[in-house]
Length: 131
Image (cartoon, rainbow, N blue to C red; front, side, top):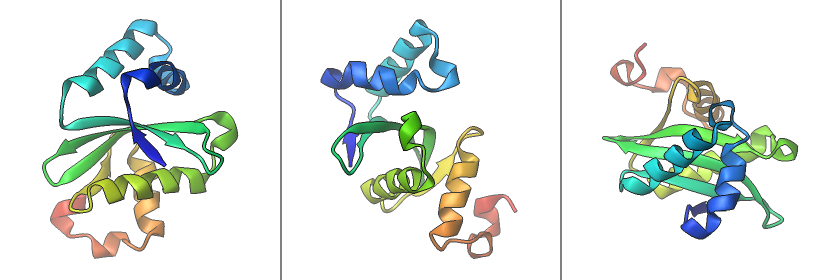
């Protein structure tokens, strides 16, 4: 289950984000949390697994017709493809009129998720996919 970040989740969110190499620095981590809180077009989500434990985090930003997945991380013992895809499935339901896109960091994950969920590269418009 995806839950929107709230200030009472700060320690949990910081722990999740610190699993990513870019957020080992305290100031960078604080700036990232502040960035998500500062805009209505971006959200940081915490993900709870089937045992109701916090197990991951996902950051997304609305850009036109797209929902850009800026970051995605799972606890080391939860790093399974099915968990990643479940997070992306849940994110996609939050904005059904927008297509999920990735950054340089997350593009491979998003492409695999799209492919295995029935939207192959042939089904995308050429203007949309850059191919």
